Image (cartoon, rainbow, N blue to C red; front, side, top):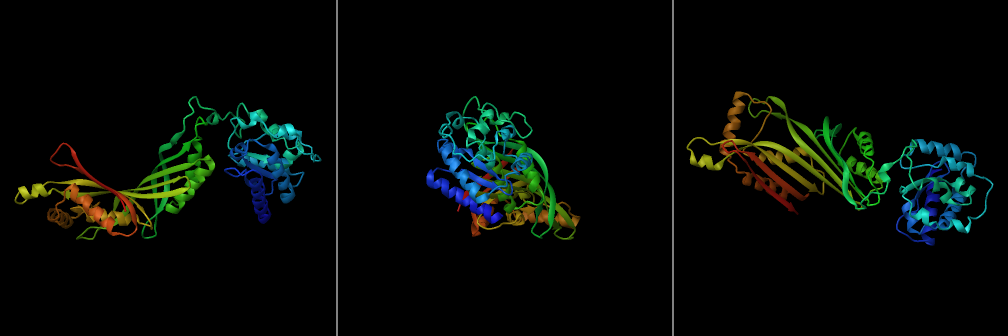
Length: 409
């Protein structure tokens, strides 16, 4: 059955493209065992709403797919319950005449009203229903040209025509806290809570987007999220929103077990990790980010004072785009080794002395820190671009000091 469906779909696309080459495919999919066709209305409108071309393609569908004539009603209702991107014209099924085999009337070949109606990008059409009403697809849709109903029969205001027809670069949700599972370098799964931001572009012709779909999608993938799953999430967003671009950011606490430097007492150290993915015009880009707290000791105060210096806690942020997989732990190690001393969740007295002496022996300005990080990243062969920032909460000033380096390799 799947081979037949694939063959029918391929033949349909070839038949239509040969008759009217346009941008996009008219038939996105044949729905298995249903006798239904999902029609891409954008492509259909790009062909000037030529119903005759669509009718010829539908006749080809009937020859290849051969839907069972008595089952399309149940199939239509089944799809209407489960396929979110469809809307339906169940009342129009009364127009069916299974024995009808006439060609579509000439008056149905073009419809100015249909071409300019504010319909969604996709419809689900019963091929037997189209055949039964002489191929007049407009009859299936004309009752909904003023307002489109969702699957519950309620008005879908989001796809209304906006007051100002201006395209929006990004629209979506943010500050959503959601449980996710990530894999660490030791192949252990960490359960954490991510702050989620998801967005798509919005065409000028639509008033709004469907925000609830973002939550549905992240809930579907929350079992385990890596950079591979991030691509799958974005592909799903593109499909369900019929969008040109999609963007997702996950910011979450990430824990690494560390041993105290002298006592070797174990404890968990918290860092902040960021997964950021975007698809735009079919191109996928993934960015990995970390925020690492460290200690920095001021070189100037050490030089001025004989046996003391002021130190402070500094945050190092690293964002990288790479050609190969990079672990969060690798970026954390680069950050900590570029500071005066690393931080620990717990230190015994002997550990505290060691860390204090280490910081005193390695004074660093924020300028020194970002340069050291940049040097280590640049020495790797897999980093395509990076953005490094260090911000020091000064202990003897009423301000913070920062430095930043951003480069593309």
